[in-house]
Structure formats: structure tokens, C-alpha cells
Length: 460
Ligand code: NAD
Ligand code: UDX
Image (cartoon, rainbow, N blue to C red; front, side, top):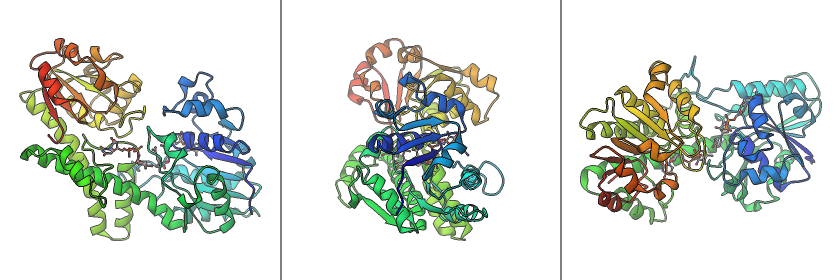
């Protein structure tokens, strides 16, 4: 049996940060050190001002306040933390490869491999190494090969423990998970991790499987979730042509207990760092095994999502009499969903980019996203010179300012505060006709039409 007194987690990002904070809160007797090579991020985690934490999640700052300095530490000294730890979580990013073989499809495993090599080089005592990052099935075989060929007498046990938290609800998801999944080969190592989670999670919600099932379940769960969004989004387009209302359709099918009501909200398209990356990865894996039908099947989920973003932007241009050149368009919401400051793969980026191709004058407001992030996100696409992006795009601190003199407003994130705005005041200061394109079906059509807006919503 293993006794876990010290945990190290490599990667203090959206997963490592909240996950380790909750484990530290629930297990005050275990010392947890989160390490990251990004010194700025670690400094932000250590900032006495809790508003400066690098990740915004409801409830997170209170947990950090409780555990930080007691049994939760943030450091850039990766080697020291590895050396001391009994258990090491690897929670580094696994983005889509943007070079070489598998470019645009496969997961880039360079960060994972670096971690394994660093652990192999530094460890002088036995370790349990936990894959927390989302990884292609059979990655554990590669980790094993790196860790077991060091020539030293140190033993390593590898576990797969994928994370299912969603951003914006990370703390709640961690405190009350639908399930915890642990894949592994060594019973004692598995039990050591079960013993940690079982401090606050019912044991009947802790599933143990073999390594490969665990790795593959994570990619599969995300593929199924994203598929539901693409499925309802495909129906939203048919609704717009036929007079059916996608919300009514979603409600009607969702009451079938075999279908279920969650994840049936039509939108401008799913975003976030996971869905697209993980499906591309699944498609890539299927192709490497020559399973072309399997690959094509899942690829369609992405193609549908790209189509949804594109057609939303096209509809704005068409409705504004086929030209948005020089017209001010306000974008409300830049984050990929509400209650997060994360913008990775946000639909807003692609909608804005498309409108910028038409030389629109874009004004963005988001309650949590720093203004510089908007520019960086657009520049990353490389669609035009940075100077042009900065000339065409402004970021406002105030939503009323963002909407002033606009021809149209596009709602791209479902932030609650948008519902509470004084829409009559916004209307008074806009150009006429005044259009709203609601990519989240957040607002009330009847109320807005009374005020005098021309209102379009996905799936209506
Ligand atoms: P992130 O980019 O927010 O954080 C990863 C961190 O790892 C970064 O701060 C980076 O500097 C650090 N890092 C990378 N290589 C390192 C190294 N060799 N040594 C030290 N630090 C290193 O990423 P994330 O969103 O936390 O995602 C991490 C993993 O979890 C990914 O595999 C992702 O697919 C998976 N995941 C993410 C979510 C989510 O909602 N974001 C949910 C479930 C699973
Ligand atoms: C997802 C998974 O839900 C989570 O289990 C996994 O660990 C990481 O990936 P996340 O990307 O943080 O989580 O958020 P999620 O709530 O799944 O939303 C993803 C995207 O889909 C968002 O852009 C959201 O707006 C969109 N979405 C979601 C819809 O458009 N309609 C829905 O019904 C649900």
C-alpha cells in the first residue's frame, strides 16, 4: 500500500489550478505543490490580491484563500516538487499540433513527454504518476517506456485520471462529480488515488478501469457532448427555414428520458479548449488505424460547428443589406461560455474575424476578458496585419459605450448581466434600423421588438 503525504501537480492551468485547490481543501493533511514553467502564472497564483488569480471560476478564490500557504503551494521549482512528491499529476496542455505530421489534427504531446523525461531525470524515490491531461489512447505506454528506461532503481506506477470538469462550474463539478475515473494496472496505486477522492466523493461514483479504457473514455465523453451541440445546431438551421422553434424542439425531445434534456441548447457554435481539439484527436487516431468511416463520422461534428459560426456571421452581413464595411457592430461576450475568462476557440473570435474580412468596425465588450486578449486572439488567426486588426477593433469597458452608434449587436456569450441591461437606453443610442443577432437565445423577443429592435435568434 502507498501512503500519500505529498502531491506535485505539473501545470497550474484551468485544470491543475482548480483540481489541486479542491484536493488541498478536502485533504488538509496532504501537502500539494502546483508547479508551472510559466513564472507569471505562478506569481498570479501567489498574488495576495485574490482578484488577480490567473483563472476566474466561481468559488475558487475562497478555496485558494483557505488552503494557500497551509497545504497548497505554487512554485516554479518543478524539480524540487517532483523530487519530494509521492504522487505526481501531469496536467499540462495538450493542444492540437500546428506543425509536422498530424498538423491541425493530432494532439501535441511534447509537453507531456517533457514532463515524463523530467520526472525520470529527477526522481530518486518511487512515484505514482497520474495522467490528468486529456491524452490519446495508449499514451501511458509511451510514458511507461520513458519512465522505465532510466537505469535507476526507482519504480513508477502510471494511472489515468481524466478530468471532466467544465469551465465556469469547475469548483462545483470537482466537489460533486458525476463520476471520477481512474485507470491503471497496479491495484495499490489505484487504491492510493481512490483513497484521496473518497474523502469527499461516494465510492460508488469512483470507477476503476484499465488504462486504455480510461484514456479513451475522456475523448469519447467530449465527442458525445460536442455531438449533441452540433446535432441541435443542425436542427436550428432547419427551424429557421420552417417556422419550427429550436427551443421547443429541444424541450420536446429532451423530455424523452433516453435523450435527456442537457446539452441541447442551440448556439452560435461550441468553443472552448477541449471539444474541437479532442474530436480532431479522435479523428486522427481513427485514421491512423485506417478506420475512415469512424473518422468521417466524428469529423462531421466539427464541420457542422464551423458551418454554424460561419452562417451566423453571414446572416449578419446579409441582413445589414449585404455590407458591413465601416459599420459599427457591437459584440457582447467574448468568452466561450459564461462565468469564465477563457476565450480559447470561442465562437466570438471566428464571427469577428469573418466580419473583419468585410471591414466592419467591431466593438467588443466582455465582463471578464481583458482587452488585450481580444487582440491576441484575433492576431493569432493571422488573417490580416496586426495594425489593421487594431484599427478595426475596439474593446470597451462599458457595454453601453460598446453599443453606442452601432448598427447591430451580436450576442455571443450567455452572460447573465446581458439580460439585465436597459435595452431601451441602448436602442436610443443606436443607428436605425437597430439589429440584434442573439447567438445564445438569451433575450426576450417580444420585449425587444416592443422597444423597436429587429431581433434575430438562432433557431427561430
Ligand atoms: P492550460 O494551458 O490552462 O494549463 C497548462 C499549464 O501547463 C500551462 O500553465 C503551462 O505553462 C504548463 N506547462 C506545460 N508544460 C509544462 C512543463 N513541462 N512543466 C511545467 N509546466 C508546464 O491547460 P488546461 O486547460 O489546464 O488543460 C490541461 C489539460 O487538461 C489538457 O490536456 C486539457 O485537454 C485537459 N482538460 C481541460 C479541461 C478544461 O476545461 N480546460 C477540462 C478537462 C481536461
Ligand atoms: C467540456 C466538457 O463539458 C467537460 O466535461 C470537459 O472536461 C471539458 O470540456 P467546457 O468546454 O469547459 O467543458 O464547457 P462546456 O460547458 O462543455 O461547453 C462547451 C461549449 O459548448 C461552450 O462554448 C458552450 O457554450 C457550448 N454549448 C454547450 C452549447 O452551445 N450548447 C449546449 O447545450 C452546451
